[in-house]
Image (cartoon, rainbow over all chains, first blue to last red):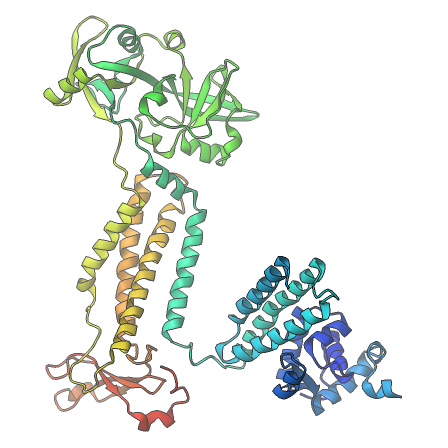
Length: 105
Length: 499
């Protein structure tokens, strides 16, 4: 997808949340305040458009913590470019959820 | 230890996820379910209190979270369809075929359950009028026309009779009825109060009235047409002709069989009948015969004699009131039987098996094939039952012989066409994986029939079989043949694992 592609505010919020380090569906729900019926379908569409990529956590990590493995999401290069474009379109986005880099400063 | 509410909520949440997973294409279902179950575990963990329980409010929020899975499942399905990826396991498979038939069956059943006419039909079939109650008419006249004068009825009723144990009478006239501002003209039967008890007809929504007003019994048709089947209509006061009367009940659907086809019955005491109706007004007489009367009827071929008002002996004929109602199941059984009998006339019942092939199907394969065929027949038979009821009763809200006739014809047609399709479909299904063979290719030339084979070849997408269907059956190639493909073909098929 082109870097200039316009995302909906919901999709941009989800991208921003993933960029901010909230990489699981439920944590994205918590930080954005969006319901599960919105977050998960939006993530499917973002993944279809190659803006995010999902990956299963290693079983050994989950076993060590005695919990089921989780599927986590991370931004692709195209996703980062699109997020940058979206931040210009939605200037308040970054203030809602500061990225990890911003938080570390 | 988990509380019962925890267990119940957990079961509801997991059931919601499993149900939603059915919407996800099979190829992606496992991954999708794993993600949601994992997320559910984490969601539940985040709500657990110190005493290791979850509050009811939190359980509600978790359940709400699970319900979001339906939206996600639909999204995954939509994306899968848009990407052109259709599950090869489902496309043209036996499961898909059975699912379609089940969906049609369910739809027909749902429509059937909403039709009021069908309830009336069932009621009519269950309803039995007192078999000893007979319609008495003058032998010279026609039983469907009123022939017994009101005065004669009163005379017979209040004098000792040899042949009659009990008598009821009614006379039908057109009267204007008024309820509020609405005015309608109905066929009103002024009848004796014992009419329904003599017929043995149980009234619906019977209302005990102590106000002294005359009682009205509505026919099922009027109740449906003018009162929209409202069960609270009983007790309401209507103005009939020049007096008020109270609705005391609704006659069951079968009551239409009384001659004169009254819309409502105005029940009146015999003294009132004597006042309202001139002595010679003809009406219908319903009688319960005494044992002596029954003997006389048997002896004299449904005819007895009695004295009229002039003390002359007149011949009377007695007609049973109960018209035969076939009933839903009897009609269905008959239509199904006819369809099965007619099936060989419209389609070959052979499944296109040939004994020329060296391949012998395993018993498991054979059982699976015949089980699939049996399931199709059962589902089609079910569709025939409900769809024919839908067709017959979609326009009528009450029992009618025309609807019964329509049900019989449509059920026969649906079952016959359906069974024919089931056999034709079965002939084009791979004996190994039961999927429909596809990609038809025309082979040979019809003009060279005597030189070589010509017809259509179709292939199983699982790579199990090739089907040859001759375009012109000959003595050496009269029926379709299956060619079983060996494992050397498997690399050509992406979906060869199926089966």
